[in-house]
Length: 139
Image (cartoon, rainbow, N blue to C red; front, top):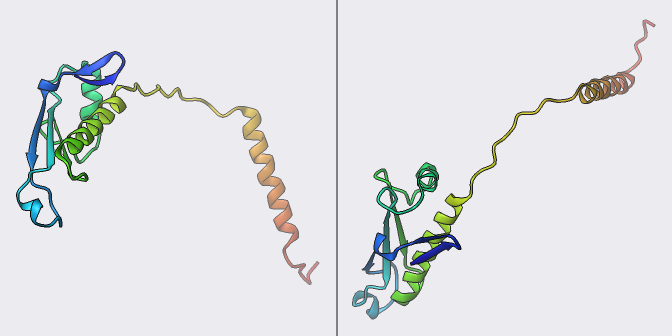
């Protein structure tokens, strides 16, 4: 089980992990070993709560495919086990972020006193700027 929160866990059978070859430099060993991990998680078929699924699918994340799968590639470590743990941790963080319910914004109004203060400040600033003008000869 991948423990996301104390009350929410994802069974590992819903997460597909594949070992692939890592990219980049690494010497002779990189051509023989598959240390990078491709993690695939189908959000629609998962056992997550529906509201959590909806928030997860609504995110604008490049790791989310059109079909509703999350694809994470972990290759920063040299061992397959460390990359596996890193991929699972990134998935856990993604799901945990989707469990937080955003607060509903209640529209508020600006008070009359605040409007009056704003207009008074504008008037005062305008008078100050008017005093900076050069005095004309006609007066």
